[in-house]
Image (cartoon, rainbow, N blue to C red):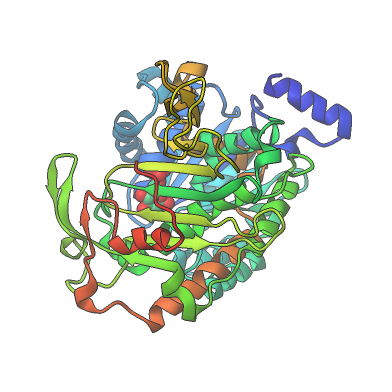
Length: 531
Ligand code: BG6
């Protein structure tokens, strides 16, 4: 069944508005204007503009579609377009095509704004007005906040003052918010309530780009469109789960940001907690945005809180020192630009997470994420329990000869989010020799070879969804707050027990993190997967 058929089926069977189902692939949004705040920043240059260009190349953008790039610096549309052309050539997913770029870039304008002064958004209001009145913009606006957290509240207030947060009858006004979404539970709540002064929750789209990754979306299809895995997806059959999001890159010149943030805030609170929720949640009854988000929140609420006093027992923090990555010597975190020499900021985190519900009681989830590790890998590994009794163990005579002494390895299901996107299932097989030798083999699915097409970039999917009004792949206010509740308790515990300065760095760049991360699992009689 293709997505269009699926959509037809859903709307026939349940009278659900297909726009709300998340099964709307192939739809074109209504004419609209995307306003990017922070349009000269890294995200806009490397991700947003290349993603919009790819959507335009694939004919997925509405007609007409306008981009208003805004920033504080005094620039003009021509030089902005020229800069973005270079970025699209460098970072674009699809080959560059001058004619397609010209078509797209024609509707990209740069507007200088000043958020600090009272009427600072006036130039934007005027350009929007011109688009809406004379160029078929239909008063449909998507405001993308790619700005530091401290600028988000003031900007949303300014949008309200400028009359842009309330949509006209029959039009829409949406706010897309980039992470980091606060620094802890308290600041996230403050930010939420500031945004809610101007925009209703249904108008807010909180980006977690991991949710836009094809492989993460496929997790839901894998779990809920296949009958054979779900019956095994629980404490009875699963020994434990490992969620790994590792990177070989360092902080890429973002010393100041990272020093404020660290691995727990940067990766765990958002991406890793989302992966946890999708892996462990109950089956939703339909694919409506709110149904899925309800299930994720329910799961996040079942995550057993780690009391600050127990934080060091359930988590491990690390910081990289000098080392070798991909054959090159790289500097330690404390030597990076913008990082103080005695920094205690963590660039690695590992944690044991327990979920207090019937499905998962007694099945731990181990999470790890870090910079400058051996390899860039994001995966979810489901380690099944051993067979209850192995007839293959022991030195007994059998028609096959002497059976091996060793136990057989338990089944392992690995969902590879990136790179080498795919899924593999490890099971035991008999080695084709005269004796009974057993070895683990893999049944493998590779996106690349099965579908022979490139997956769209996460930002392509998410930008399109925001224009379509589909909130399924965006984090709702309560999801973000639940994830913060869990992470804030850990941060509180870490703050009360800071590492001593000589404790960091505690892992060499290019390795798999600090020794303590291994001990975290060894204590439970388990080990991290070797990647
Ligand atoms: C971002 C983090 O959200 O995700 C970065 O701020 C990190 O520190 C990035 O490098 C990883 O994203 P991806 O898609 O490359 O795994």
